[in-house]
Each structure stands twice: as structure tokens, then as C-alpha cells.
Image (cartoon, rainbow, N blue to C red; front, side, top):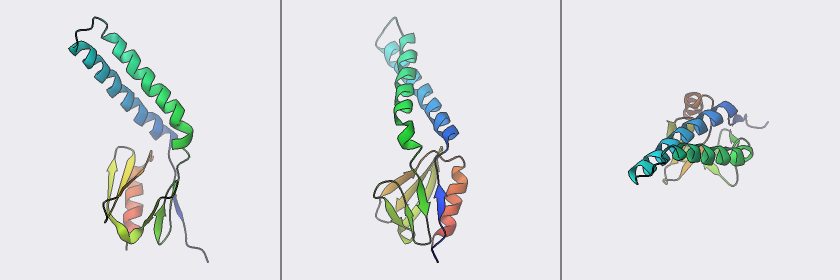
Length: 129
């Protein structure tokens, strides 16, 4: 009988919310730089910041929203060649809509855009040996 598998899939609303915050910071940062250099067109920083993050989020959406992590009794397996044995996990942290996995060897992995990152963290911590 196969091990039960828990899947951690990205949430579209968390993706949009995270990128909206990123756009707000990019807009403010670009405006601050233009203000500091004395530009009379500070408002263009807001347009540039918004445009940059909008294009980035549109371009990466299909890839980021397809990145699924799975956990069985032995390991956490992510996109690409990522495989983290549960007995090698040293810490599980939340950062916004992300859950960070830190291994005993110091490697770090992100499970991105979780609708309920605290629930993801709890599920992983409960599975640890």
C-alpha cells in the first residue's frame, strides 16, 4: 500500500496578494529614488514600479502556480529535483504566504503562495520524526 501523500499547492489569491504588496513596495521605492535624485517627475516611479511587477507577475504566473510540493512519510518533494527527507528538516518558518524549510545542512526551500501558511507549517511539523 502506498504512503499517504499531502499536497501543498499554490493559491492564486495568495499569488495576487503577494505581488500587489511587491508592487506597492516597488512603486514607493522607485518614487523615493527619483525624489532623492531631484527628478521633477517623481510620479513616474509609481508607474514604472507597477508596470515592472505587473509584467513580472504575469510572466511568472504559469510557472509559480504549477509548483506543487508533496509530502509522504519519508520526504518533502518539490518542483524539479528538490527532495528533503523529513528527518533532515531543522526548522519550518512562515514568511507572508511562503513557508520556508531549513535543513540541518543549511539548505533552504520555499513552498510559495500558500493560502494558509500556518496550516502548511503545522502539517509539516506534525510529520517530522
